[in-house]
Length: 438
Ligand code: ATP
Ligand code: MG
Image (cartoon, rainbow, N blue to C red; front, side):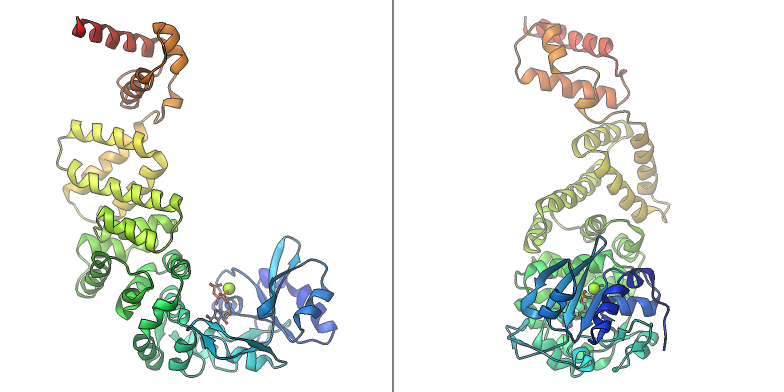
């Protein structure tokens, strides 16, 4: 079978051609082949070759010996890096993750044999001819995921493959063949050999993919998340399991509905936050989960801020309209418009189908959100020095207190953001304060 080479692969042709001119075998392998067959956009282009790493280094000017010990050289062409890996065999595996040693070989087919799934064990040559010794293309057209060779052995060798399996099932809407699924469930305990950073990377890819709901459900159904090296709080694993059961039974509750529509949200962290909201996780459980998964502090802050707004809204929803508007303005000032916009996107998705009061309230928040003219003291037309000069007073905490109060009023549209008007307002408060004290 022959495929037209998509642009990103085409761009890497000079590398394959140069290797071939020097009588080495060289083909495209891995995800780029799978995605070409599926007609999907290509992420990274990987090349496998019979040339030894030192021979690859000799043939190309711009190289980075990224993974010299396992035979990988990154070759730079224009501004893109391409991983060129020597055909290899892997020996016995250490701690269910890494091969103890590798051995360079000359056979492409044997190299494909060490790969995880049939759909990842295909190669394309420079003419676009597909080399597919294990029936990857049949499995792709039947939408099945199958290990190359014996599934039990493959998951025992490298437990990360189980998580990759769940990701491919989710992102490509595949069904595992029975043997592969059984092996995955049988060896799920080996997950505790996998570094949490790797778990994070896989979960991110699952959530970022086309069908995050499916990947989550597969993760829940497999039980893999119950066996991580750093355990997730029971509150989280219970909630995931319950959401999975609910989703099988009915989708007509908030949780099921939001989880079932995760793919409509943009951004991985927005989806993470939506999951936390749908599962109604406590602040503590969410924090523990994100720390266990080693998320960066920036991401932890972004996700927990969004979840915190959702928790506050549970209370604000019961307030009267004027109070709710005040709450909302404080919230937008506190978290910033970028974060509140993401939260609103999630809320719109959670409530847009029902005719409930919540739906109306979310629309109202959206309207108010658009009307808020400014959200930060930096945007006020007065600053600290203006206030100090105007009142001829020493700096102190009073400056930021007054600015914060002015911002609240201006953000609510109760006074104009004009220097003189703001100063007069501050003077009014000052006078009231003085009268109060005397
Ligand atoms: P993506 O790039 O979309 O995440 P991918 O399949 O390309 O998916 P990579 O990690 O880039 O994943 O790996 C490239 C190829 O290397 C895979 O397609 C597979 O053939 C092989 N491979 C990667 N990880 C493993 C593993 N843990 N066990 C066996 N083979 C693997
Ligand atoms: Mg890849």
